[in-house]
Length: 247
Ligand code: URA
Image 1 (tube, rainbow, N blue to C red):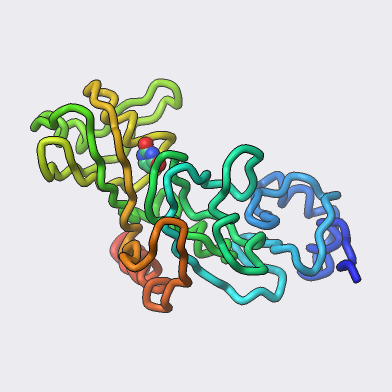
Image 2: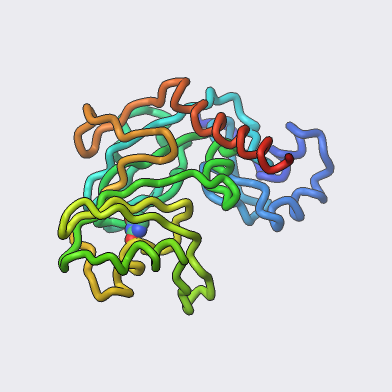
C-alpha cells in the first residue's frame, strides 16, 4: 500500500505542534529541508518516508547515518541528474534517497564525499564558521613556483561573486604536484586559484575533510558508513573552536 501523503505545512504543524500559518515564514527563512533539498512550497506532498528537517532536526524516525564515498571522475555531486550518474546512484541501500551531500566536488574531481540524512551535522560541517580543512591533491599542467603560496595565503578576489577567498595553504610536492588546503568551497575554487597563474589543473582529488580521511580500501564508486569516532571528530574540533572563541 502506498504511503499516505500530506502537505508539508500539515506534516510540520502536526509534529511540532505549531500553527500552520507560521510555516510559510520558516520556509522563506531557509529553515526547512525535504530529502536534502531546501523546501520552498508549503503545499509540497510528503509522506512518512520523507526526510523533513527543521532547524537541523529531523522530524521523521530515521536513524542518523553518515557515509563516506570515493567519488569517481564523471559522477555528479547531486541527488538527481538527467545526464550523469549521481553520487546517490552509487549507494547500494534502500534509503539512499534520504541522503544529502556534505560539500560537493566537480564532475571531473575525484575523492572523498560525505553523505548523511542528518541535516544538523551537515549544516555544522559546512557552515562558514566551521573552519574544517579540506585537503586536495592537485596535478598541474605547468611547473609550480614559489609565487603561489603567498597568493593563496593572502586570498584571491573573485569579481563575479564579489568575494575574497579565505587564506588557503599550498604545499608543493613536486614540479607539477601540490597539496592544497581550503576551509571553504567556492565554485571551482582550486581551478580558479591556479587559473590566476595560467596553470591548468589536470587532476584534482580530495582525500580528507577535517580528520576524516578517504579510506584507502575504498575503490572509486565504493562507500562505507563512518565510524562513530569519525562522526565525532568533526564535532570535537568545533567544540574546541567554540570554547576558544568565547575566551
Ligand atoms: N575546487 C575545484 O576547483 N573543484 C572541486 O571539485 C573542489 C575544489
